Every structure is written in structure tokens, then in C-alpha cells.
Length: 165
View 1: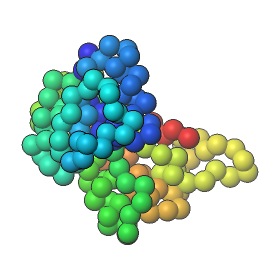
View 2 (view 1 turned 90 degrees about the vertical axis):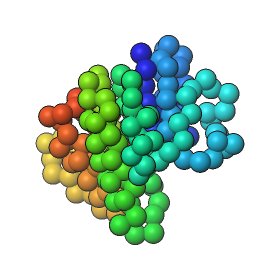
View 3 (view 1 turned 120 degrees about the horizontal axis):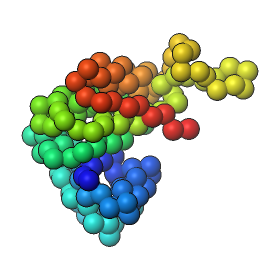
View 4 (view 1 turned 90 degrees about the horizontal axis):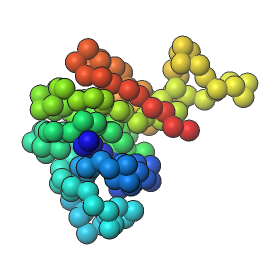
């Protein structure tokens, strides 16, 4: 089995890469230019693909031949809403479009989102999936937009969305 992980340099992404490798997966990591700064990925046997979420060719190359896409890349800090949208929402759309073009038969496209996409819970109870999302930050709004984009591809790709706490 083969998987693509975006955001593999991050905290959750690096643990995912490590676990996929331990489980016998071949792993592609789409990483921006900083090969000498692998962080938690240092010493792991993955396929380094240089690129980003706005480079169509690197996206197509990274999804080609994989069984799973785990999309964790994104911005948690930005100067304004437009920057959040460009990275979190548009980047998600670009990766989904590249997957449809280069590898539409994948087993699963997993978008790792955030609880910030739904907003805070009330009365100390977790929000139900059926409740209206009400993000209170630009980050949360951009993650909700990314989720909506992913769901719009559900007729073309098997999509799952995770919101880790």
C-alpha cells in the first residue's frame, strides 16, 4: 500500500508518517523546499516530493500511484482571511483536483481538519455533527471552507474528514 501525506513535517503529520511506515506503507511526503529541515521526519524512509499545494505538477506527481491521500498541510497563522483561504481552502481544492486528474481510483482521500471549523461547544457538551458550524476565527472559517470543498468532490472521490481535538 502507498500513501501521500501533506503536512508531514507537522506534529500530527510526522506521527502519521511514522505509523504508516511502521504498518508497511510506502509513503510520499509533499514538502516545500527545506529538505535540510526535516524535523520529526529525520531518519524516516519516505519519498520526498518537493512542491506545494499551488504547484499542479508536484501535486499530480505526489498523488500518482497512491492508495490513500492524507491531507494535513495548512496554515494555523496568517496575516488575513485571504491568506488563510489561499492556503487552507484553495490548497485543498488544488490537491483534490490533482487527485481527480492523476489518480481518481484512490481508496480514500482523508482531510484532517480542526474542531475550529465548527466553533466552540455550548454548555460543556461536544457539538453534534448535525449542528450548524459556527467558526469564530479566520482559521476556523478557512478550515470549514476546506471541508465544504472536500465534500463537493465526494461524487468523484471517496472523501473522509477528521476533526482531531
